[in-house]
Image 1 (cartoon, rainbow, N blue to C red):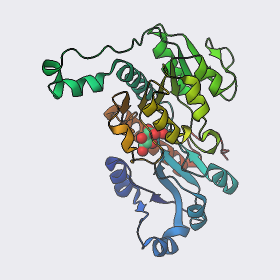
Image 2: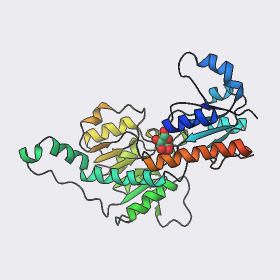
Image 3: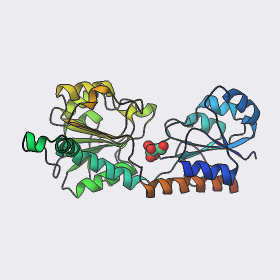
Image 4: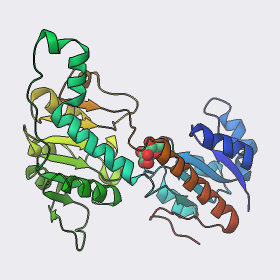
Amino acid sequence: MNRRILQVGPLKPSLATTLAERYDALVLPDDDTRAVFLAEHGPAIGAAVTTGRVGVQADLMTELPSLGAILNFGVGYDTTDVEAAAARGVLVSNTPDVLTDCVADIAIGLAIDTLRGLSAADRYVRRGDWSKVGNFPLTRKVSGKRVGILGLGRIGQAIATRFEAFGCPIAYHSRREVPGSPYSYAASPAELAAEVDILVVATSGGSRTQHLVDRKVLEALGPDGYLINIARGSVVDQDALVELLRDGGIAGAGLDVYTEEPKVPQELMSLDNVVLLPHLASGTVETRAAMEQLTLDNLDRWLADGTVLTPVPEVQQP
Ligand code: 8YV
């Protein structure tokens, strides 16, 4: 088995250092030396370590004929071509569970910030408006709001549990109804949006969920509805979202993810009914350390016996 390890894209610095020092990993160049690098080292590469921001596409896989595993730092792996990997017998692992709590916490934080205007109020105080203008305008209550979860997977479930503690009735839409779930099931994203005050996007990304939240869904959410997205920017029609936010078609949005990160539409910058985060939901010291450890554990397992601990569902273990 070829065992050379390849780093694809930037990684958490401590992970990159460990890969280089402990595993003698190579780093894929992203400049014009890449083709020469791949011609020289491609055939020896056994495993690639990457993140959801970069991933391994089918064309890179063809340059790595001995590739046996792609280890993804992060739960989302929509930038890796899992069908091409499965067809080539390449294993793909991700880092589920260890980041669920932090991502769910940020969904709640975004909802409270968006409805109660925390970031906007902070700007208000810093501008000196409290003494110049007077009291901050009234905001919207969070407790008891009807919450819709789009994608009741591990993270969606953790978000639902947290909102339950706020006395919020929960509904959801997933590809399939979840057996035994205490929450009410809506047959489509638009039906879900129509019956809730806060719509939380918690699906995976990729072609299957591209623009699942389209203009129709946002219009169903309506002028009193709020959108929270901690999943992937690709799930939401961002142009429609910007337009509806600007024109009062929806009440507000809390966003951790965007269509083309790190680009954030300029039109959102001046809107006080929008909270903008730089894709930080899993970004705590504790959780990123756990993601790093799980990535290395997957790599060690693959080196030991050719399997991984946390394979993505689309690929079969040997
Ligand atoms: C990370 C994420 O920001 O896990 C995911 O899918 O989006 C985040 O946890 C990212 O994967 C790390 O680069």
